Amino acid sequence: MIFIVIVISLFLLIFLITYAKINAFLAFLLVSIFAGVGLGIPLSTLFVSVEKGIGAVMGSLTLILVLGAMLGKLVAESGAAEKIASILVGVMGQKHIQWGLMLTGFVVGIPLFYGIGFVLLVPLIFSIVYRYQLPAVYIGLPMLAALSVTHGFIPPHPSPVALIALFHADMGLTLIYGLLIAVPAIIIGGPLFGMTLKQMQPSQAQVFNPVKMDRTDSPYGKPGAGSSFLASLLPVFLLILGTLLPYMINPSHTTVLSWIKFFGNPTIVMLLALVYAGYSLGIKQGRSISSIMSVFEGAVKDIAMILLIIAGSGIFKQVMEDSGVSVALATKLQQLPINPLILAWVITAVIRGCIGSATVAALTAASVLLPLITAGAVQPSLMVLSIGAGSLMFSHVNDAGFWLFKEYFGLSISDTLRSWSLMEAIVSIVGLLAVLVLNKIIN
Image (cartoon, rainbow, N blue to C red; front, side, top):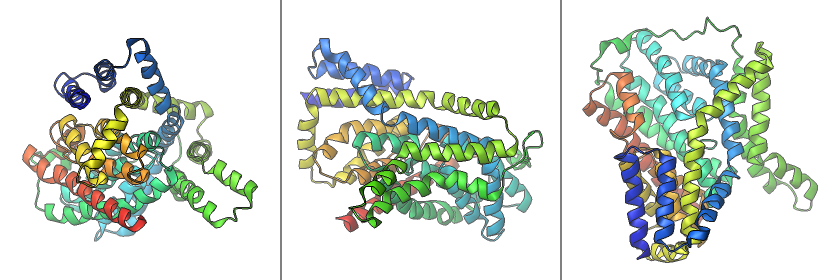
């Protein structure tokens, strides 16, 4: 009976989001209440589970997501992202311009949320298309593949950060694994796959109109190359250092290890990166404190709904725990003749194909798969990345990213499926294979 309730709950969630067009947070809340009643949680304590679920998941990641959003917004609005793009494209030259754009998407994609990065970088793609008379899809897909992979695998993006919190994974270790997985996924799904799309032409010629990139209306100067790269990559460097340094220090040096642990905490890392970015990309460029704070306030507004959706997934997770379903579900899942990492990828991919949102698909799958982590069936960081890979699969007409790509590049639906959807499938499958290889090496 309990498994019937779980299946009905998942189908109801998919129906509410996909067909009824209910907001994902409200859908999670409604389905969680339905599941709680169906799974036998007493009505008098059901809303205790609701409140506990919100607090449990949000308490550990709200600061990281908010600080990460502020950093990404400042990197975008200061012109640092454009500076990084112009340098990397210039270094690679016209012959290897695909690789330059891929690197740009990767570096800029680490601090920037996907939607912001997409809208910010697409004009750069078309300015290059106009300048060198190159095919738009061939040039643009590697950059967008890199953006997509960072969105699925790399903290501080919402989905991996939320999964890390749910599974109690180590953020620094997940970041290191995520970077290792991202490299082959981006190369194969980006430049290599892009080579097959040289002949794809958009149906709307106006997309080739030049796009002016310079912010001549901005009263602030553009940041230098060093400040731009360091502000974007500082969280990565600090998280990796915080993960690796403890292995290099004598265990008897407890004071040193305590300081390393403190400064390696993801919240402290993001705060330090934000302070540096506020100075180097803001104050140093002539911005007032109030102007910088205005950017930060806008960033919080941008991610308000993402935070609510994550909170909703926390409610669903808590209901499953408090009802006692988690133990029974763990037992059943462990008995399946399939690797737990592959199972996680399949479940997430199916939900993504039904719902359209990578973040919602990942969080929904995590609620079902959490018992496997609790039972110690798989390494938490690898489960985060397996779910992240699955969340990139099956991007089609119910995905906002699909339509962004189609409309910006002026493609038919069939060409969008052949380019964008296939690229997402490639990075998803390569990501899963890389996770399985890592699992073999670790174990």
